Length: 261
Ligand SMILES: Nc1ncnc2c1ncn2[C@@H]1O[C@H](COP(=O)(O)OP(=O)(O)O)[C@@H](O)[C@H]1O
Ligand SMILES: [Mg+2]
Image 1: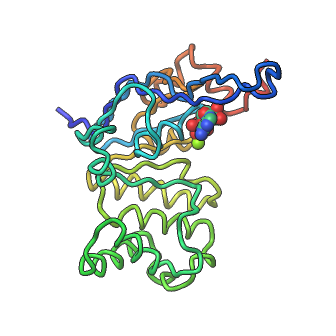
Image 2: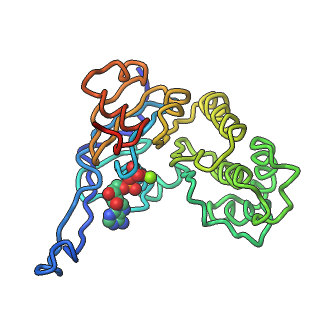
């Protein structure tokens, strides 16, 4: 039997906001809205699981909750057996988040210096960091560019550094939120190959959020179809694509909702 790495139980995130100008008379009334609604998800070790859905579906919110970056407002989850709410430190030590919204690197420092900084932050000893940094630079193909300033890197190189940083502490689970956004086709292919050939070969588990059907089909073993904060279906893309009840979902995902007749 395969080992469960992620398990969520009615995991929910509500945001509250003021009614504001949508209802001028009750401007200051608070309304709550669920960005993620009662998600029940089970992911096994070594799986590449896709969160597939259009913008606003709740993929990033779900990912951030599972990475302990925002607190759930309901339900529970375990990552590698650790409780998301009560064992945050252990959860953090088990995961890496790689997203396309990369603002946390120090742009004036070199790639290598950045990795030294993050290795210390993640609690690697100096000795371990000296060993590990050249390894991860090699793995992502950034050894030659490691001593250039981060700000000089192309989008693809920045993404490689984000991956290198994620690899530093050798976590079990990788969360990737739209990781190929803004990359050229060669860089996209490299990242997909890296996920499929290297990460899963090492028994890593990957949760990949994307609005790109082709990406989900190419990379993911299984996907969860997300829409309006809900998980509508789960399975292999090839199976789900033939499901008549999901025809509108796939149509809108490819063509955009405005073309719906
Ligand atoms: N901090 C927040 N406060 C209020 N609403 C939010 C916040 N973050 C996300 N949302 C809303 O939650 C919904 C889901 O957003 P998100 O998780 O970013 O979706 P996706 O990543 O699938 O595009 C959207 O309607 C978005 O506007
Ligand atoms: Mg998102």
